[in-house]
Image (tube, rainbow, N blue to C red):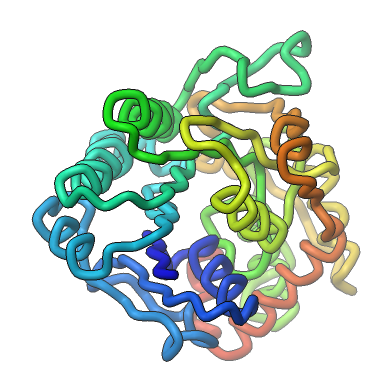
Length: 330
């Protein structure tokens, strides 16, 4: 079986590649990445996957790759995925996520291959919900409040359109908050963990800069998420959409308290206005019954283990490359 993962060098893509390889079922894994993308996340498996250079804006390159490898399964994880950055770069975000996804689906249509395609949308498409909407079901209205969320609505709807119009076997997921080792430091819990690790190594003062700590999130470990994605493409129906998320709900501040409990240092917490979004989504509690009922999947890794592993990841990273702490220094 031939598997193609877009965004394979990223956080989720690298974990997914590792998970599939650990199944030892003989799958051949290819990954699409940009020539300038760091390969650090693939350090453990670099010689076990085959990387294909392409940009989602280059339809001809995508067509050549589809014709060459003819994948049985495509996981489309590559995206501009930073919400806060999308406010500063809305056009780039919309172009990458919407036009890039259209190009990928067009390449599949033009080459007449017939893979199962996982299109990774986001819980951000639901926007700011009211308590009457909780827990959030797949039928909840889409009210995007960031350029990133708008781009994910477009990606989501393109996947459905290509299924309805051409019979291309897309399955959409709306993944809720997920974190773990290798998470980029532009995401809250990873940014906090990096600051804690930097202070422990005496690279920065014992201060954690934060945004809105009152936002409510339901946390899932990335390793549970990629296990769900593998089950999805093997058990779920084309044309459908599924919420996927964890089962532990708390505020960002409560999650930070857990993280800080793993350090012996005493930290000062400071709100950084630059970390406050122009429009925020502060209430995300998913209903994942549809996915659970069809697949039997359940999250298995506790928030405590996720945050401990995330902190240990940054301790190791900064011990090896202390210059990375410069991005948290004020």
